[in-house]
Length: 107
Length: 115
Image (tube, rainbow over all chains, first blue to last red; front, side, top):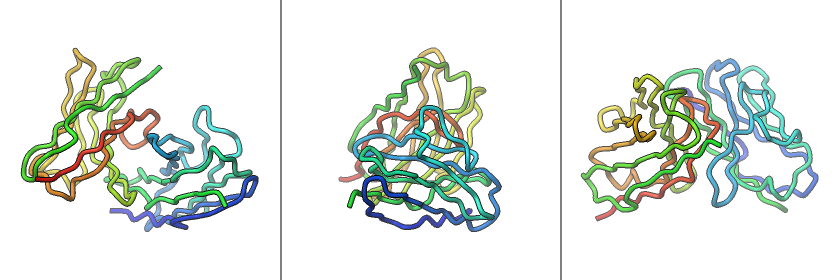
């Protein structure tokens, strides 16, 4: 299985701060990478697909990028409603595998 | 609007089978793919498998001998059965639209495996 190493595991940031979360794939996965946000008490929500494409209805402060086998999710100006757990998911090779998650909290 | 709703017992005894239903409204399950994902205590997420618009299935090899995903198109529902459960199957189970990319999710159902 492809391993997705997500970092950091937890992150404390201030309002309006820039936040970056990364996932390192154990092998090439092309752009078969999506990002999900899970707010407290809610189900996960798709943020980014194809490594860089913003899902419908997702604020433009979220963006995804790729550098080789490293993938990043950036929140340009952190808002209160962005608090939660973030996951990456690779779908290049079966079975799809998730990163370990990043718990984002307000400082 | 597409909506998914999981249902099923919240407590299952070890060695028994876990059976969950996902009821879909606002979209036909004869289109697209429909998956099951679980989240363990401690936040690890695992892709379990999916059933396609045609009824074909794909499963996580780690579960392949224990898992079955089926559907009832007349009720627009699909189902998860996981056999021979252990305490390690304690998790929140989600159904979602998609096979490997999920754009609509149910609210999740917490299942505890305990005697």
